[in-house]
Image (cartoon, rainbow, N blue to C red; front, side):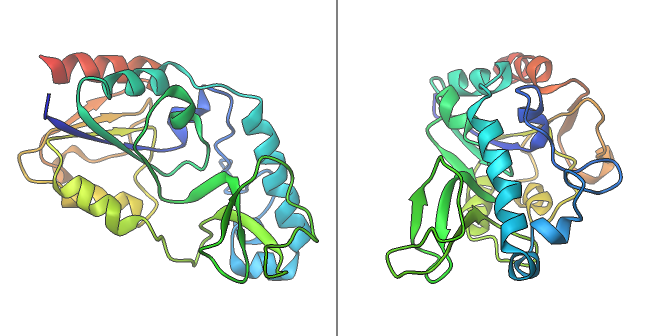
Length: 228
């Protein structure tokens, strides 16, 4: 089929695989203030703390597997022109078999140079102080931190502009610029919003259908609906 589907995913799609959703109810990430571990200033202040934080996340990622939601989306790609825009930094969509994944916030299994941001390396081990790029500059996590530009946002916007169906899975739609992506869809495009505790106002988005389920349950429901 030539029907185009764009899927926007957040932490909720990976939570069932055992990936921590980072932010606790009190706003802390694993006991840390967000700005300590996810900002250029935090990196400047305590490089070792930041590296340790992401090294732990990376080790955890290598121990988990894609869940039913990831697998269902990968299967859907066999029938539709499907692309995924994810706020997640894990590779579970790719491991499930999805081939077109746009990572808005970077990728945990990559490292990049602090000298040249275009120098990006596949990286499954811990990043340590003293791990340098080819220009002898320290490597950092390939993560978009607060206060940094989101390089893939323009590509994501173009995907949403041209989609026939939009699915939003496991995201509060509160973090910008990702939360603004839905505003770029055409008015007649249906939106399937899958989240066990939906925090979205139906009146703000045309064509919205809320499926108040966790991802592994809600994604198959949405797929059945879009096929009818």
